[in-house]
Length: 504
Ligand SMILES: NC(=O)C1=CN([C@@H]2O[C@H](COP(=O)(O)OP(=O)(O)OC[C@H]3O[C@@H](n4cnc5c(N)ncnc54)[C@H](O)[C@@H]3O)[C@@H](O)[C@H]2O)[C@@H](O)CC1
Ligand SMILES: Nc1ncnc2c1ncn2[C@@H]1O[C@H](COP(=O)(O)OP(=O)(O)O)[C@@H](O)[C@H]1O
Ligand SMILES: [K+]
Image 1: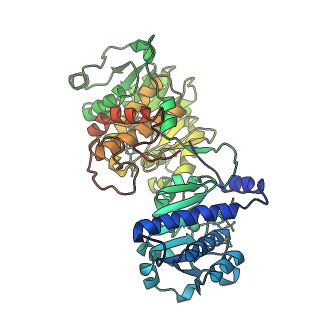
Image 2: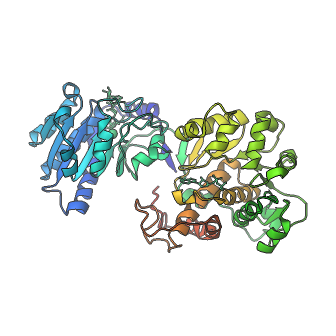
Image 3: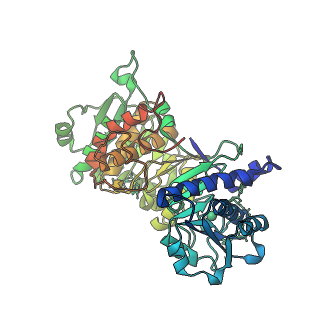
């Protein structure tokens, strides 16, 4: 798991280590990464040009010290001080001692940005509040001219939430210290951070409320048959999806469910003939199920379908049209349920579930906040779809999905996810495990499909570039689920993250 701690937790963990050279450790890691990048880009550190943007706090101090370390290795380092009178005294002295140039805000031009081989964003770190201040805002666009490394987090991103209330720097890489922060994992902040490299500095913070699963976590979660298994014991997932108008949603939800680890899929929607023609494995008779998936493309059948599902004492996943109907009925519709409910809205459906108090854009801009709000209001686990899918539990615990790709933003891919998550529920996973596991496999399948199902280890997946990728359909995402599953289970026994580079 990647644990993402709040600023308050980081500060407390830092206080517990008072007297230890935390900044030295942070700077050593930061400088080493910068040196590596310069060697990759220029062949060597010596003679390369580094521009340091330094704000008034310790974040600026880190950047200035790292600049000094690079200057000692022969880089030409210049620093721009945003608040010259409040710049970190130690960092400033260290840089000056190496002969580094120091200038102030007004004297730096766009050409300085274009000439730099590397720009260090030390404007503000976990002490930042409320987006970049107006004086710092112009750097957000100027810094796009060079390779930008964010110190601890990109300036302007809210560390605790990933919200970006105004201008913010957009990094090619973020070097963060001690622990991850939610703002580095959740969009839109995550998009500004780029790949994140963690430099351990000895912090021992508590278990974090926000965590991002990795391959090994998934491998431990996914259900597998044992010698005693039969199809009923592995779980039967019931699918109430599709309608005469939207038969495709039924096919895709069933395709997702078939790959989800349950023993059987029972389909009870209207386009049954088509479903069984495409998926002969499916049962069309009514009978016991261990979970229900209700809503994808269910159209005019939705009210009845929702009745059936919500009345059952098994876990229920509500998606798409089911969510629109649930929004009409309000949280009270789930009040009598004894088994868990999992809601899988995209931002628009989430806005509807919140009673139209907010727009879809507002939800997408504050994903952590609204996923938690919805989970608390409905007493259900909520999987908020979109870039950096967020899963929230009513008590505020959150899992962020690290595997998604924008290629998944294609019609019907949500139906595949719903079926998949429903099958994991039927196999016995609690919703707060089933939902992140489904998002993880779905995201990985999307990446594998976009990359042409290239063999694990090809280096395409998890890298910054999307070179070699192509558009995919929802069917192809479903078809890539076994490969994603294999990729995850292959990580057991020492092959962790061979293909994704997703880290610990
Ligand atoms: N807490 C820790 O455990 C460690 C922290 N370190 C560094 O220290 C940083 C935190 O340092 P500080 O507490 O001094 O805080 P920052 O350096 O993040 O920011 C504080 C300064 O930025 C200004 N500021 C606040 N909001 C702003 C905004 N929106 N726009 C522009 N300026 C703004 C404030 O006036 C204040 O002077 C971390 O991000 C990290 O880089 C590391 O050196 C090592 C360990
Ligand atoms: N920008 C994005 N990055 C990553 N994943 C995305 C992005 N946009 C959409 N997705 C994913 O694609 C799927 C789309 O689902 P949904 O919105 O329900 O569409 P549909 O109803 O057409 O299937 C979800 O799993 C969602 O998380
Ligand atoms: K920063």
